[in-house]
Amino acid sequence: MKESSSFTKGLVTAAAFVVVVAGIKMAEALLVPFFLSVFIALIFSPLLSWLKAKKVPGGLSICLIVGCVFLVGWLIGALVGSSVGDFRKNLPGYEHRLQEMSAVLLHWLSGLGLILDAGQMRESLNPGAIMQIAGNTLTSFGNALTNTFMILLTVIFILAEEVGFSKKLQLAKNSNASVNDGLARFLDSVHSYLGIKSLLSLLTGGLVTIILWQFGVDYPVMWGLIAFLLNFIPTVGSIIAAIPAILLTLVQLGPLTAGLVAASYMVINILIGNVLEPKLMGRGLNLSPLVVFLSLVFWGWILGPVGMLLSIPLTVMVKIALENDQSTRWIGLMLGASSSLITGRPNHSDD
Image 1 (cartoon, rainbow, N blue to C red):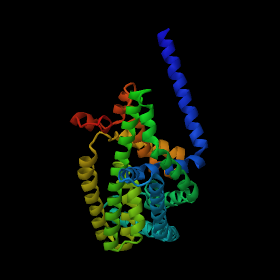
Image 2: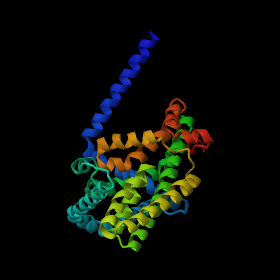
Image 3: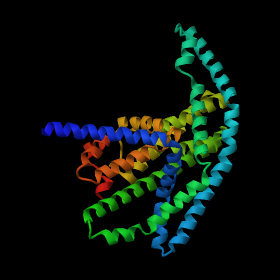
Image 4: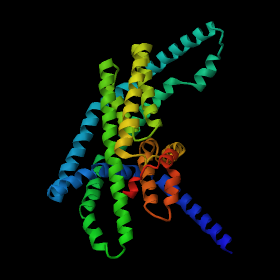
């Protein structure tokens, strides 16, 4: 009887999960701006806490943060908007040049005795398609930001709710202290993760922009923005961000400069991803590479390209929430990287 009850419970849970996922998929147009609003609010939440600690009134703090969000959005639109349009307009020329270089490479390989089918190579390995994906991703992200007023309004309400949230926790502390403590730990962990990750992503995007500008690569600010956004995706994000910029450098400036750009990307990612990030954040929030890949596929299928950009922050928030509940802590540990378990690094959720 107990086995049948457990099976029924598992079946109901799976059915509920399918229903929720189908509902999210159908409400994609509504949920993408909402998730972006939550993401923006969580990034600026530490700034709100700092302003509150400095005795700045809540209303004025929210106005300052919203003004900052609007200014950043305006700067990104002004600097990147025209670059995305020009890049998409020049994309057919870049793809044609890449095809010509591929033909030269195949001819050189055939001279060495390695005969390859040119048509099959173009179908299985198309460098131009990678650049097309980069342009489509930025366009999709820009389309999601077109509803700026609704996003800013949602950010205001989320931040306004957070202003009085600590007082609500204090009033409710006597009712269920363990739940309130767990929620407080969850919020602290999320704020810590997103705050540190945002600063490191901003540093990554800034360094990429400066280096590409120094080399003379077209659209350095656009590639810096891509590096900033994809740095939220561990392991594969930096690779995805580097490939189209390296291909453009190859087309524009030749193999030698493309190799130098690739080396620069590698140095930036090693310094920030393997040196700074573990020191500042620890390894407790690391995700398994399999979980990273499945998160990209899952959230990308549900919410499109924007879902892929937000996939890891969303998954990390789920992981933190699972780890702050004793009954689901084992699931959160299963989502983590095995290296963090072997090294025994502490988890932020336990701080």
